[in-house]
Length: 356
Image 1 (cartoon, rainbow, N blue to C red):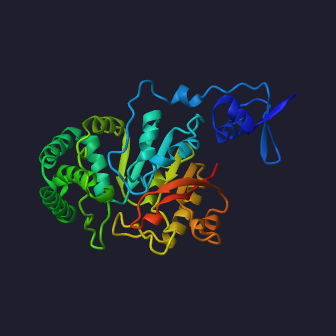
Image 2 (cartoon, helix red, strand yellow):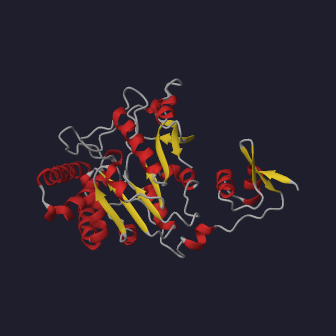
């Protein structure tokens, strides 16, 4: 019998080499065998039918995208991350994302798969409030955003800045002293600020106050009604939790795919952009997360973790290689967009860590 390599099979079938390896490991390709550290496949083997499209992909489903721009968003890495989606395995019917942020991976998965249960969480209370408001009251938030858009766009630069600062102060007042009765207003203002602030950042000071200055966009789309309605529809069956990632333990089991995208470890001494909340995520927290990942691995969950690669600037820094020593670590290219220094922007390596 003649054989071909996984790379040759990938080229022949138009899929990734990693996907071929997953199919082999899942015994989806008859007579495929592991020789040394590589798969060999019968040259006459046919590409297996993609079970993901049979069981989980909705026909004519609406494509949804994040409703916020979020520092560290994973839109540019979706093609890499998609290779890890394990939903072709009929056993994986749930998804959990305990550091959901802007939700690029979440919305990619919701656009492609109809899963039994989905869980998202984050410790950023204003972010999770906005997810809930869009899910439960999309008409109200669209009306408020449309009104702000109609008022803001015709203004000149100085009046825009003054309006923005008024909304920022209002948001911080609601953030600090608001009750549940202002959740709709707080969510609408958060989206407005995100669409009009510098670089679409969400950053707070040590007091927890949003402090990003106004941006210089010519014609920002503040009210994206079509996408907001699509997002609301996709979130209807999603459990939305404001809380620490550890709370996801009760949801995660051996039927769950979990994606952890924590605040990245700074790759330089000056790159400490972790202030999405007033709580920092230091090396101690990264180590605690790795221990939690071990616990979830013990439950049988399929897990992917992303983080910065310290070897970008220090080839001897084995921090993640050490704390995730028992996992598979892949280094992928990414564009670093957020930096006050232009020379610090551009392509760098990031880590994708998995237990499968």
